[in-house]
Length: 460
Ligand code: ARG
Image: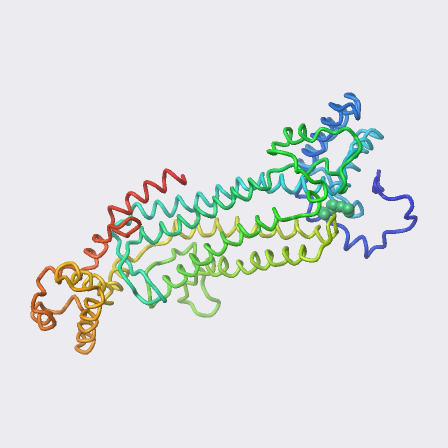
């Protein structure tokens, strides 16, 4: 059957080529074929259980749908634009496969509840791959952390060197962010885990359907309670794209650091040849294009989130065709994020750290000034503010004399306070500084080792 089986007979002409063009979504929503067939099979089984169709008809429908599934998977089906969307294409294929009985499948349902059910299932199914990819990146970061508990690097505020930290401490910060991304994803999945099938166009149906049965067959937690809400909202898609946007923000910040660290003035990392790009004119270049594109592509996903919100903002309740664009937005955001996660995972796995440069940056920066102030509090019983000001004076002295704090002699220090002893000088070493940060969540190697074990248990 070539014609759209749902084409209204009262519309004698058309649709025009232009209407067909703007209306057709098959190029995008063919990605839902598996879910659409799964939903139809569950629906047919329920219709038979409730004796709305016969068992024989159900068997014929299910067999036909499974055949279609195989054909699509074997790339033996060409979807037709004139059939609008995945639902009508599959229904038309079913007519071809089993004849008139195909016309019974759409009893007690509408494309409005069908699409939202397919779409929720798609998000559920594909979230596994998403979660796996985030987990993989966490694993890579944890592996780097394990090897770098005592690798010293600058910690920044305002992108000015602040205090020494370990590379492990830095990486675990991202592991935690990604962990919250995963938990946000699972929250979003919990909320969308309600079955809209059986809501019909918006009002429910007069057929004696069993929504609990389709809920069970499709592995949803429970049926949605209001048919109008079920077909009208796309808040689950907004939430999903928001989760994707935040993942992207985290990836984009990582990307930014990779870009900065690989810059010659920093020179903290080297991007191996296969993850760097050259220039068409400057033969010496080693550009971080991968990281730049992860950072740049985040504009797409963040833009998508905004688009989806704007689509919904003025819609009256009930289905409106504006909503059809939700698939384009979700699929595109999802694809971008999966690619970005893979690219970031490859980058982190292959980066070579210039540990000497990282430590030198710390040691050339008076980044242990706070440790000296703390020493004054602990050893000389000064208030923190007194200690802070005393240290400030010493910092000014070293700056004026072109020296670093750690290079001042004990005698020079004693000028500021006669009770300053040799242990104050020891406190100025960066290794000492990280070793002493033993507060919960601090950067000391001992702590971080525990944090890594916790991360392994919690996330891997
Ligand atoms: N292709 C449509 C979409 O993705 C399916 C729902 C169509 N419903 C309708 N009343 N025209 O939104």
